[in-house]
Image (cartoon, rainbow, N blue to C red; front, top):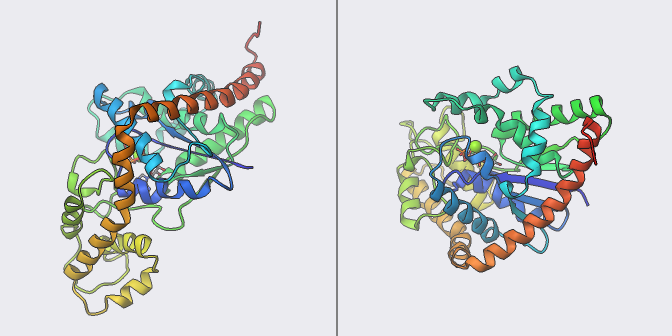
Length: 327
Ligand code: ATP
Ligand code: MG
C-alpha cells in the first residue's frame, strides 16, 4: 500500500476550512492507503501559544480526528513532539535548504507580517514540514491549496538530498481535495479561512454551537449585486456556494440554477441548515470522545510508538548517508 501523510496544527479551534480542505477527506483514504495523521504541535509553537491552551487544543484535535472518522486500527494518529526524529531530520534538511527559498514562502511572509518579534522557527516551518513527510516514505499528502508552495519545497528538498547523498527519500505528491481546497474567510473573501484569525466571525469552528454557525453564515460578507451567481466578481457568494456544494453534493452551476431569482437571505438560511446538519455527527462524536481521556491517551501512545518505529528506520539510513559516526 502507498503511504498518505497529513498534519494539522493545534494552533486554535479547527475551522470549516480545515474540515473541508483536509480532515473530512482523511477517513476515506484509510482502506486504500497506509495513513499517518499528526498533531503538529511543534509547528504550532512557531506562533506564540499559551502552554495550557496548547495542551487542551492538542487533545481537542486528536478527538476531532477520531470524530471525523479516523480509525486508529487502520491509521496512525500521533503527536509530532513525541517522535524526536522530526526535529532531528528537520535539522539535517535545513542544511540543504536555501535561505532565499524559505524567505519566499508566502505563508512565512503572511504570518511574519502579523508578528511583532520574528522568530527563526517561523522561517524554518517548511523544513520541519518536509521532515514530517519524508520520514515516513510518504507518497501522497492530502492538504489544502495553501500548502502547494510548501509541498513543492518538500519535493525539492527530497530530490536535493537524493542527488547529494544517493536515493533515500520518496518524492511525495500533493493530494488536493476535489472540492473546497480553499475556503475563504466569511468576513474577508479575499483571505483564506484560518483558525488563527482573531476575528471569530470570519470562521465557522468545528467546536461551536449550531446557533453560532448559523449566525456567522447569515452575517457573511457578500455584495450589493443581489443576484446569485458563481463568479470572481462576487467572491463572498462564490465561497458560500463552494461550501454549499460540499454539503449538498451539487455543482456550483446546479446551485445557481436552484436559487435563480431568490435573495441572499433565503440562500444563506438554507446553507446554514445544511452546514449545521452536515457537521452534526462530527460535533456529537467529538463531545463523547473528548471526555474519555484514558481512551484518547491509549490511542495516542500506540500511535507514537508505531510512528517512532517507522521514523527511526528512515533516520538510521539518513545518519549513515550524511556521514555521522555510528558506534
Ligand atoms: P493557522 O492559521 O494556525 O495556520 P490553519 O487554519 O491554516 O491554521 P493549518 O493547521 O495550518 O490550519 O492547516 C491544516 C490543514 O488545513 C492543511 O491541510 C491546510 O492546507 C488546510 N487548510 C487550512 N486552511 C484552509 C482553508 N481555508 N481551506 C481549505 N483547507 C485549509
Ligand atoms: Mg495554516
